[in-house]
Image (cartoon, rainbow, N blue to C red; front, side, top):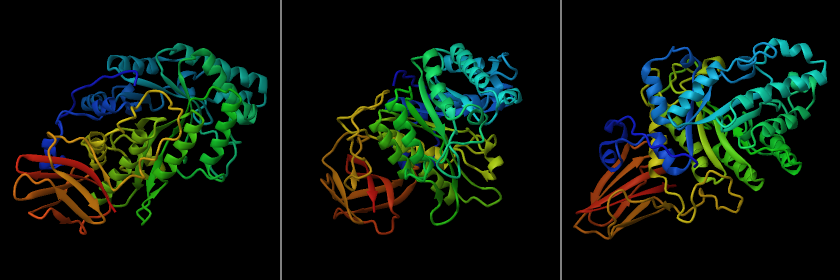
Length: 466
């Protein structure tokens, strides 16, 4: 990454991480410090209430301690920055940029061309193509030049693809008045003003597959055309507003599908960013602790894409606390990583532990550029044991999983004690014997952290139980 700012953060609760595992991890590590260490950006919006001072002080404290990238919920959109023709208002955007500078955070700009939140005066020109082109061009040039060198990346075009079938959204004022070429023009104009900014196309439902009948499949063909024609596109933003359906399938949308999109984009030298993540439940239902733990696992699965795919670098959540969330308008609830009282949920724990336990391949370093070699092996298809860096000094102990049996060798005393934690850091299994063979049939499939202790020797590894 271009910037590294390690902030000491909130002291993590040992109750959340499990008594044993809390001692193994640094207690003052934050999402931000771990994201910096892993070479990625992790962030959350600044909710609109923040701009008017309508949030408690601990909201901002959490935000700047835990995140290294920021975007405004509404304050850089068209209606906010040019509410009247030719009269621009940058006050709230400037406030956020100043906050980001003071706290060493990367800034995303959202969004330049979108069918929604367009001020009414724009519609006066929807039957005048020449004038509407001039309106869009002037808006982009003025806004981008105002924050040139301060906004690192822009959502240049937002949600331009139809929801119902793979085609452009024909109801957009920009499409109606200009046609699909407004998209190409928007990228060209933005790049001309700030050639150093990363330029993204941003949309939702991209995690629902890359087949030709899916939105992501249609988008891939457009990205191929843009790249072939020299249109300056550097990234695709996946909003990833995911819903828990409380069925056996659990979630609409698939981390595996989004990973497939990342791999296809890598072939085009284009990045994937998760830009608006939330995982909500239907409003009105009772959300159990088990539901929240499953939610945390899904947050982690999306994070794995950012950690493991070389052309993925951003994991940005569309909100901080469930109390201030747009999800109510979608008839959803509890989709973020802090609860109504700004207390971390299992999703926070899951993200934290995954960042703590991730060990990049020894010959691959995460970089702040697109890696052009798309032959990178899918890190989800590995041997059943995925070794991570020991948290305590190396020893002669070793372990491996075969089926549902754990084998431990290299005892330094008569017995070996095994503790297994889920990816939220909660203990799920603990036992001890002198044979080094441990039956794991009672443990559900998934990723776990295993710690073995024998005498003064300790070994901690991440394993996949299948």
